[in-house]
Length: 377
Length: 252
Ligand SMILES: Nc1ncnc2c1ncn2[C@@H]1O[C@H](COP(=O)(O)OP(=O)(O)OP(=O)(O)O)[C@@H](O)[C@H]1O
Ligand SMILES: [Mg+2]
Image 1 (cartoon, chains in turn cyan, green):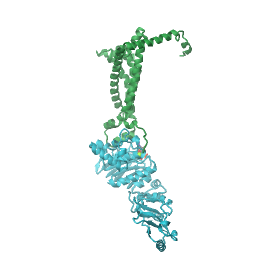
Image 2 (tube, rainbow over the protein chains, first blue to last red):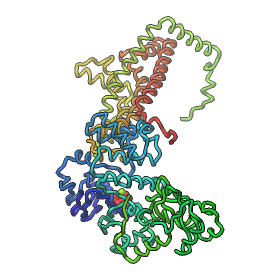
Image 3 (cartoon, rainbow over the protein chains, first blue to last red):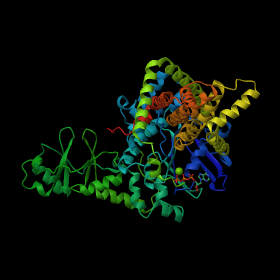
């Protein structure tokens, strides 16, 4: 747990970078420091591991005043990923990752094992990458190694300053997803700096929105979107805050059971009767193992001899982890306007429709503050 | 300073036949000298090399230590002064510096001619490129990299040894290389005050109008400089950390 109490930072030149900042990050929580450039995010974060000395106030980690600790010992216990990655160019990926274990004098074999484990965790093949140098990695790979390095000695706390900055949006999105997956397993207490509202909504359990060194609003993402405290927050969140709310959900959070699931061998006539009775325009075709095959539309059923021959194969399907905003874009590409949610083995899990999404948006709009079922991974 | 080039070239006798023949003769005599006294030339070369190595080794040790010392945060003023002094040093003509050193050394009742004053002078000359390069190389290490080290709990000394110095090595080596090549030339003048080396045949040649001796000395000083430059180039490459040598291998 990290606790900042009335923290003030005035730089020697008189810049008041952080003003009376108080906040608590609970154990296992990912807290976003969000705000426009120059609002004091980095400064606030660096005071936690004492890279920047605070002017006044107190910072506690698990109840211990950080000023009472040896700064180097303190820092070895806190994972740190800086704004510009900052990999050591003269050291291999392995040596980079094991920087803190090396400082802590772990035995060599344990260091090696840890480096392999961490590379696998961030989705890189140890065989290929352990011996490489940073100059032999792509930008995205460097960011991954940066994340692996900050996890080096398995610290309970991480400080991450725009860890996924400066890469293309696609890789960025992928790294964010992967990191959330990792975080759901390792449950670190994290202070995460970004100026990107979308990243904040997607990643944060809590968001601390800052303006000119002050903490303006400290809430979970849904609350921040739905009840901005003042004009500044409203503007920062953006006019499209309702659409942004889509990022709070993943497909599996809101998908529904298909209205009608039919099997390959079913009699088309019976299916047609059933759909007529229930007034369904479409149903979903699966095989005996619940693998999703395609869509059946009522109109096509009239002269059909078998379901397979009139089935419309899906143009796109989606995984349960997909964020709702992405899922919605996919739905525009789907012939039927609906989206099947399937798992890795193509088992049909559920379906997303525009109606469901309209419902969600409506709820957000009417000021519903609880985000239901939303979860970060 | 208007020098009439034509007038110079057309100076009577400068490019006439006899002069050309005489010049060829000198080179033949120099060649004969080389064949006749290879042991002497070897001795001068080794003396020369010895002076250079001792002087530049001390310059390297001193220069790197000074460079590290003045590169600490908050010592910018000191750094400017030190580098200024070192560059002043280079403007003192070598004979003058030898003279000053001879005065100081004899006052200290130390040997005032020969090996010692020359080695001291060359050490002083060699300082500038080494100090300057060490200082700049350390100061120019990407602050993000240093911050990463500090943020992970490295002490200032660990940051210096594990991060700054390895990254500074190529530039420091380039400074050392510069110092060595420069000093090979200056060392030749040291023979004037009895330090031996390849300056010896040159000065003897001048005194006795033996152009063949001058040629032998000059050619071997030049060869030595070229060879040392090549060797130091290799050393520079070898001491550069591997991660800095590889640039942009294609990613897969
Ligand atoms: N060393 C310093 N000396 C004086 N002022 C500083 C120093 N470092 C930062 N500042 C100022 O303090 C304020 C906060 O800076 P900080 O780096 O914390 O911003 P930030 O929110 O991280 O911005 P960004 O998103 O651009 O990284 C800025 O006005 C900045 O100019
Ligand atoms: Mg910043």
